Structures are given as structure tokens and as C-alpha cells.
Image (cartoon, rainbow, N blue to C red):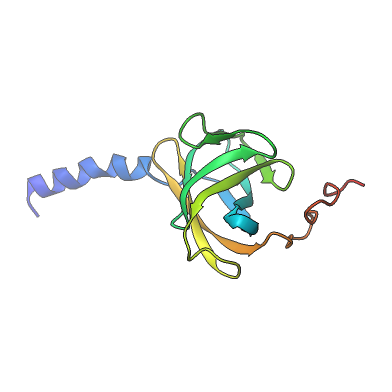
Length: 155
């Protein structure tokens, strides 16, 4: 090994550390609801067990031309504009009736019964990819109401 090779390798170490997935961040319960007329919306939970807040700067999936965060009944916002701050030591659930991911331009391969990856990008260049199951819009996981039902835990 030459001195130049060793030096080049050492210069790459900080770049690899910056691009690492944020420590303590996990995503669970990811799924897309496939609605009539190809409307596709995504629900998930994100946890940050770390001691620092984490900023999600974007979302992408090969199943969608574009993904953006949207409030139910409201306007969407791109993950690249203001992002999503996940506070330290917290869990955020994105369920029906609240914020969710909106899939613009779903590709033909996205259909009920399939699973597609969704990649969350973080400040500093790190990413975290997790599978989202594609379900019929009438489906709902435990703790979440069916379409048109009362809020989970409420009545």
C-alpha cells in the first residue's frame, strides 16, 4: 500500500461517517393505501431514540414519480423544502386523518399486495430505506381506524 492510497482512504472516512443513518432512528408500520383513481397515500411511524433531533429532508420510492408530506385535507409540502423534524427521544405516527406521504405518479408496478421500498433522507446525507406494503384503501393496521371510522383510541 502506498502513502497516496492510504491518504486517499483516510480522506473518505469522514464522508462515510456523515452519510450514515442517524443513530437511533427507526421507521416502522410503513404501508401505502391504494385508492380508486390511482390515489396512493402512505402511513408510517418514525422513532428517534437518540439525544438529538433529526431532520428528514426528503422521501423517495421507485413506486412513485414523487413523494411529499401532506396533511389530510390540506396542502402538501416537498420533503426537500422544509422537511420534518423528529424530536429526540420521540415517536411520531403518521396515520389516517393526520400527515401522510402522498405518492404522485404511482408506477404500474405499485398495486395491492406488493411491497415497495421508501427511502428517507436525512440532514447530513444519511438515508434509511424501509419496505411499505401496498394495501387496498379499506385495509387498516391494528390501532388505526378504517376509512371513515373514528380516530384510534377515540369514540
